Image 1 (tube, rainbow, N blue to C red):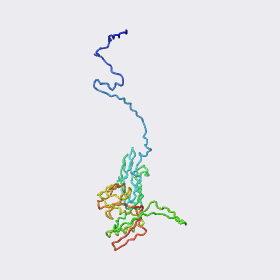
Image 2: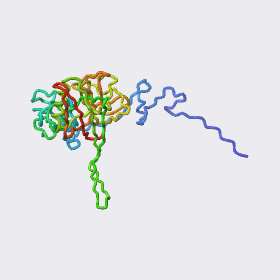
Image 3: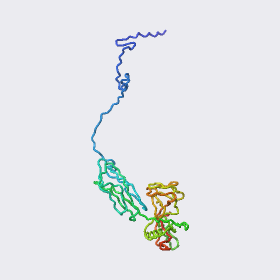
Length: 355
């Protein structure tokens, strides 16, 4: 027969022990894990985060990116291709003093090259430019001047090599032929290629392309509405025999559908079936004496964006907009005078590229 389990021995309490924990004193825990609960009985909670001691080390200033950005003068942009200048063009140029610790002295702003280039906004020199200061200057290019633009604008700073603080401007000044055609007589348009044909004794031929891109041609009778027009056209045709002219493609002319004020960067007009492209020159005119030529930045449905703002206000309906090309007159350009005040001509232009 198995033994019966033994009865539990009576619980014996020794000194310092209590059956009801009455008056027991519990020591505070010593484990670091309990430090966040320190003072919980009193209702306060203290978060203890060990903070490392601060470390101070000496060190010299070092150039960043090999002095590419700092401790020098930046001129942005460094070059600007103005393409064809038919009216006044403006260009914003940023001059940044990237020296981080001290100002630099601007001693002067100079323009080298033919006349017609001015700079707006230069302070009275010499002038101190604070460290990290950036200033925007406006460079203006007038339509009157040398036929070829090859000018350099230089910002001279004391102790700074001017070879890195200049702006190079290139372009060509063009005089447009602003007289629209008599559409009753139409416009004759041509696309001209140039090929050399070498014929052998056996009548076989070898053809050599001499022109990479086809040239365009235009011929039309311009409209002269008063004696002033005839005098102006005759002087222009006689004086521009050896020069390039701006030739509007009148067959693509459209009228503005919304007015464009001074400083406008968008022109509203019908762009359907018109070969607009970014980089083209748009010719705006209301008469032969009121016109403006600007560069096209992008083309959208019903509008074109300009690379630079307009300098004149253009009314809707009265303003024509068309593409402008570079063209030259033929070797002979007759002009018929019907009286001392009235004349007529049939002009023929060879365009630089096909329309």
